[in-house]
Length: 220
Image (cartoon, rainbow, N blue to C red):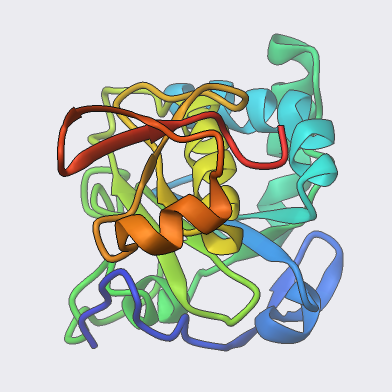
């Protein structure tokens, strides 16, 4: 199954470091971030898991749950967690799925559906495409997908920034410009007429071009 922005996030039930989890039920009515790893005890992923643990309070403020996935058995995750805490200063404080049968990786189109076997004997290079971040909204639809090469650590500050934009634009008829950060000016959507915009923004807006209408962030 090919997944795109706007696709339903596939539901599944799997074992994790916090017991059996059914993904949609675990999400509840909030947002979620599912981020995947090609193998345990890999250096770049070790730094990522630690940094996500450090950032978790920021995601909590945004009603967003974090859950990881690694193509290895759950039984190995606890040992890896100790290494992460020792080297990064933060142990994972969110659940981490095991995917030794590759079911979730294939369900989320990170490995070809015809991939056979289990994680046993597979190297990180065999699973190199299992390096994705999925942001899932309360409607259980995928809002963002990012996939990184194994040699490049993911920028989770950018995920947080993008989440701020997605949550804001879900509530208001605006878009956010390049490099936008929370509190900065936003753009009125092209679908909003000038008449409708005047009702929402009676103070007016800056318009360097008719299609580029800039206003302060709503609710700032």
